[in-house]
Amino acid sequence: MRLVNRLLATLLCLALIAGGVLVIAEVIAALVGAEPVVWDWRATQQWADGTSWQNVVVRIVCVALFVLGLVLLLAEVKRPRLRRLRVAAETGTDTRPVDTAYTRRGVAAAVRAAVTGVDGVRSARVKVKRRRIRVSATTGSFNKAAVRRLDEAAADATRDTLRRLQLRSAPSVSVRTRGT
Image (cartoon, rainbow, N blue to C red; front, side, top):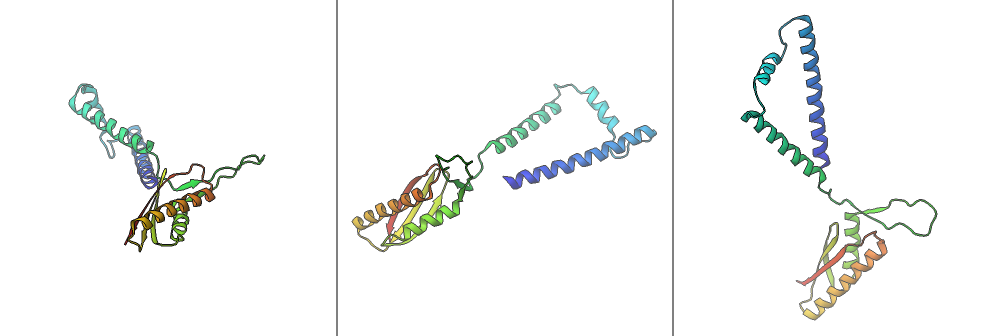
């Protein structure tokens, strides 16, 4: 969304600069008594004087601008994608807390290392979201009881890693282990 914001701000800035230059040129031309330079604003003024607010064209333009503004507002209100997970502040100290955080990729790497460190787990895929961490582990065993034990061990390893990371709000953990 940041790229879209920057692009829209640049386009708006360029449009305002072009509009300002156009107004300056038209004002100078009107003061000198010359014809309009780029845009015949007198014809537009006459059209606006003769057009009422109930005209279909005016209503369509107003509705289109309202919808565009609503879309832009909703796009800005939407929560941004989580980029980092904050660490809990130390309590009991008189110093000002330092804002510390882990990236999603860093948390995923730590969880992946912990899960693959469990004996019997071959590989793991980790997805870190705002409130949830999903772990998909694979094992070489086809025994359902062994897979269930590995599932519990992988979940314990994930929770232990999150406890050591001391995140401000610990996301829920969902672990799925399957045999290959």
